[in-house]
Image 1 (spheres, one colour):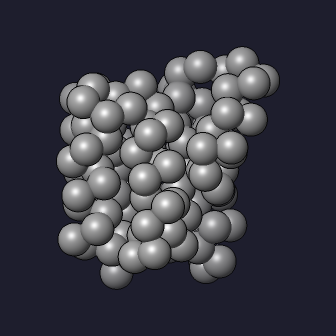
Image 2 (tube, helix red, strand yellow):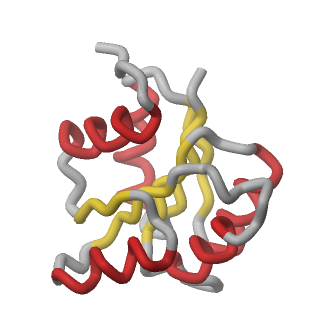
Length: 125
């Protein structure tokens, strides 16, 4: 089973997205801040990370830089999730090391297509 780490501090967003991903057949790991996200990524080696950028303790930008700068987690694809939809936010996320970028509110079909593209596999119907 493909393992996705969802790093999201907003409980409503976290619950909604994790349930929708589980219905699609993914195992979903949850972290509520960037520091916890880095720790879970190192211990669980998820196949992909969905990273909110506005997080407490350690923001998504720095969490991504730390994960991409560590050999054990550097190859894990990361999709930035943010309510910020400015053109330079996408560029900033990619510069931090994110492999892709998506805006909130999450449009599930669009996000699933990005997940599929990064994982290089078909998503269960």
